[in-house]
Structures are given as C-alpha cells and as structure tokens.
Image (cartoon, rainbow, N blue to C red; front, side):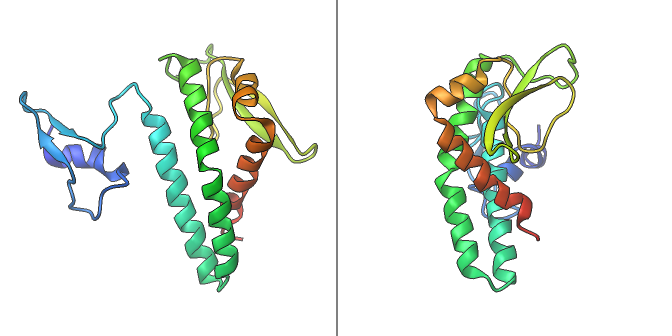
Length: 175
C-alpha cells in the first residue's frame, strides 16, 4: 500500500490530523508495511473510534450552525450537553463490542439479529429493537439480545435517556 492509499483509507478519519497533507505518525515498519500509532487494528474498536469521530464532527457542525444563527449561548449549551454524554456513548459502544465477542455485524447476513437501543418519544423512555437488514445512521448494534439489559445494568436508564436527548440536538441542528 502506498502512502497515498494509506492516507485515503485511514488518515482521513484521524482526529490528530492537522491538514490534508499531514501524515502524522505514519511510518514504514521493518516489513515495509505502513503503520500509524493512531490507527486501531482491524477487528478491535475501530467502529467505535469512527463513531466517536463522527460524533465530534457533528458536534462541530452543530456549533457552527448555532453560531451562524447568532445563538452562541445555545451553541455552548448544546456542546456542553453532548460532551457530558460522550462517555456514555463510548461505554455503550464498549458494551456492544464486548458482547459481540469478535463477531462482526454483517448487514449481508439477514439471519443475524442486530439489537439496538432506541428512545420512544411517545412514552419518554428507552427500549430495544432488533433488525436484520435495516441500519440506522449512528446507531450502535450488538448481536446479543442481552445488550439492552446489560446497558441498563452498567450505565443506567437515566444516563442512556440523557444520551438520546443529547443526540437529538444533532437531528435538529439545522432547524
């Protein structure tokens, strides 16, 4: 793989990258393969890392949109709410990764159940759903039905509800 290919595949997601040409910590190892200390090996928490990066990018977009509306105070409140819940998001992703125990979410496998947690606005609470073929943007999926119960046990229902309320800001940031 060339440095250009490596950059296109991995560096564009790196939060440590300062500009388009920055290769940060990219180097060739003794075998001639390109490596970067910021790159997480395939099969580990790569999906979690990418979700967190997208979370931060969306936060930045929210802030810019609110500032453009001359609403800096609301932008700061929104950012504060989102950042307060970033740890909850990460905990939830870690629980899913742990329960998945190395099993990948395979959207081409319609036999594989994929569980996620959702917020129901009509009852103001959370619950879980199962999907085999439909993927929602930004959702954390787990192959184990115990995902919901384990998340409630480890994180707590109030914190999970707060996470959904914080994420709701993303869907409304351009209104």
